Length: 396
Ligand SMILES: Cc1cc2nc3c(=O)[nH]c(=O)nc-3n(C[C@H](O)[C@H](O)[C@H](O)COP(=O)(O)OP(=O)(O)OC[C@H]3O[C@@H](n4cnc5c(N)ncnc54)[C@H](O)[C@@H]3O)c2cc1C
Image (tube, rainbow, N blue to C red; front, side):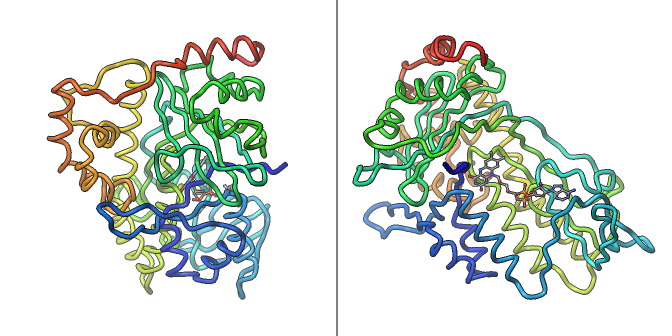
């Protein structure tokens, strides 16, 4: 049985690989990743929309490529600290040993604490949402289940979200997202409770029918999901240690349910490579400015969107005294599909969240006229909570 997390690999990731490491893009396909396509509107041809790929496949291919790169030496160790000399980064202390370097890249991810004291503090925090997911493999000859979006199937119920994400090799990741504060639904991490829940939820029941598929991973909790942003500069607005650059989730972490993190990370990596010149300090400032313009908006978008999602899942109505956030604008395409002209480029991350302003007045008109996102009443979150109490009472 393979432990494998859900992964959405967006087209920006494929574009970055094809631009910088075309052999790695090719190796992904050889390893089984499948190009994802979205059908074009009004008879236009289908467009590329990333890869369907399990995380384990994606990471194995990347690691093998790094290990096979001439001039790269892999060191498996803990980076304790960044070394400095004459006010510039001079390398790392790794498991107590010195590793000299002219340029240090901190790609230590969302929980990395390296060089923590050097930058201005991060903004943001917990997004208020959590999920549990499980991988399933279709049985030989079995037909796929129902889909309603290019990624697979997404259905919002009162108090929770259910989804099926298409992956490579006839596998899917089945997910139930909940409010982090909903401690009862946290019990869905127990396999008995998860299996009973997916049997009850329309769409998920079809995909996980034992006649169609079988579990291919344990039930995996995705908790403590965060939206955070932290630039390159110190509190005084200057580069604290020229030669030290922060990339990836160490700059911007977003709630993974929208699957944007690898895209924002590789977009940063490509931009930094383009920006880097002989003056690393100037390049760091230019890169920070680019991140503020092109990456930070995705963090701001998640903070506003997730806060509204928490209100919606808690049973609150849309607040028309404030500008509508992206979740409400995206939902309004169900009432007026012509809004997709504006919304689709945002969903594909081809246009920044500010582009949704063009769709806001029409979406607002719909909500003001009484339209609300249709939601099946059952199974309710109370139905799922009851099921947790019945199947896995000790895990609550
Ligand atoms: C549950 C979950 C699901 C996700 N799903 C998706 C998805 O479907 N699509 C998507 O685009 N994004 C997804 N993301 C986000 C995505 O994983 C991140 O955006 C991406 O991995 C960031 O890459 P990174 O290299 O910056 O950091 P990471 O991938 O986190 O890598 C950082 C590495 O540095 C190591 N490290 C940290 N500190 C040290 C140290 N001091 N010494 C040595 N090593 C250290 C860490 O152990 C880790 O291995 C998901 C995230 C989570 C948590």
